[in-house]
Amino acid sequence: MKKPDKFYITTPIYYVNDKPHIGHAYTTIVADVLARFYRQEIGDKNVFFLTGTDEHGVKVAESAAKSSISPQEFTDRVSQEFKDAWQNLDISYNHFIRTTDKEHQKIVVDILKKLKDKGVLYEGDYQGLYCVGCEKFILESELVEGKCPDHNKVPEKLTEKNWFFSLQKFLPKIKEAIESGELLVYPESRKKEVLGLISKQALPDFSVSRSNKAVTWGIDLPWDNSQKVYVWIDALCNYITALAYPKGKDFKKFWPADAQFLGLEILKFHAVYWPAILLALDLPLPKLYIHGFFSIDGKKMSKTLGNVIDPNKLVAEYGSDVAKYLILSQFSFGAESDIKVEDFPVKYNADLVNGLGNLINRVTNMVEKYFAGQIKIDFKNTKLGQEEIRQLHFRESLLTIWQVIQKDNLLIDQEKPWELAKDEQNKPKLEALLKELVFDLYNIAVALKPFMPQKSQEIIDVITAKKIIKPQSPIFPRLNK
Ligand code: ME8
Image 1 (cartoon, protein in one colour):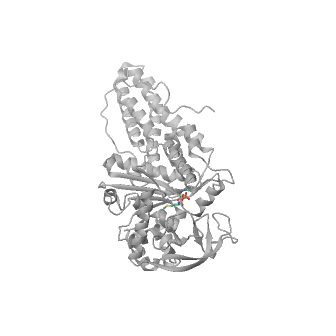
Image 2 (cartoon, helix red, strand yellow):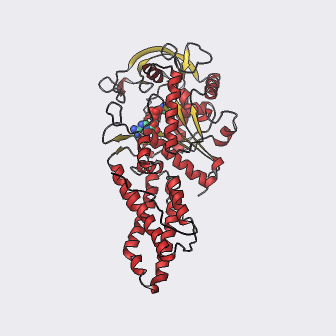
Image 3 (cartoon, helix red, strand yellow):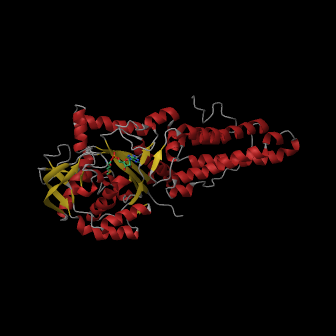
């Protein structure tokens, strides 16, 4: 498998009207695992991992007003909460972009001017239903009982002047790019969904600006002072403004993105509008990786239901590495799934305390006891579970690693090294067995590096020490419950 020269990974930039929850955490964790994996493969300086916050628009302005503070104060506060959550989860982003950053705003203005100069924007009247929750116009046919199905709110009827992007011109090229793989949309089901949208001709031209009367918190449209840049256009541009498009050295090195992660609800923006903007700017197209949405105990996550899982709480309970493991091991990337909160402690005990933790304790204890902690091993990386990561099969990578853990725990049960140790004649057999176990443990730890960087290092430190001794306090302690 040829290694890439560089790897650029992005997450959506999250709205600051909400606190970070487990949904945002999921996307950010998969991006983090991939970033850590590629840093090992091609070196730190060749990987760029971007995340950030989406801070303009009506929704944010309304949230600020509710808290009786200015939008800027409000976005400063919530943006910091996202940074804190990512720090708690030990997320290794290279840059955190905020759409209120001066540099970002300046480049967005330049991009819009460029689009206008290229003749892809035109002025028109928009009449439609607008859902503030989605920050988008919504079609009559998308409503359920007259309400936006995602926000359970009646949308507002709006008529206003907007600047539009001539999407129609670009649709044939986008379709071709998706079919040929030049614009990668993964998984296949999402690719079909986008192609379906294009062939149904269900994609009217989209607005790139909104009236100043409706939107007060945003970037001014440079040539029309009655308009603000539409928040979604402002937001999508972050993926290149963060690299200092067009002249920045990061832009030259890292664009196009090798993995743009997102949830399926923002597929249209990323697989249609974003490529259209890129094509208009004559830029190459990225790879899009779309994951499912998850619910909590069978219900949509929502503040009103009070079932929102705070990643900080998980970290406080289990530590960052374990929190990440528990989230990633629940379901495969791309699948829509339900998170069962009561599964977390069960899984922690089964996989980490009784699975990996037990294996570490048993192996180190036996090497210490039977060989005075000294056993000679030729450590070699077997690349356990790595191909799965490359394919974005994160859960499957963990399952592959856990097969070795199970195999080894079973091997100990079957071979009963404590019986072998009773007879000096069995020493070579005992030594071979322990060598195999330490060798495997090393590879398990190496394989876990992108997922659990801290725990992985702790395990490596224990088994590559001059003398292997059972850790005084277990690496995966039992829960005090
Ligand atoms: O849409 N399950 O921001 P956002 C899985 N600002 N993932 C979830 C999730 C859930 N229940 N809830 C959220 C926006 N996510 C825009 C993006 S990008 C140019 C602008 C994750 O705060 C998932 O990645 O609503 C989803 O796409 C993203 O958070 C939406 O975050």
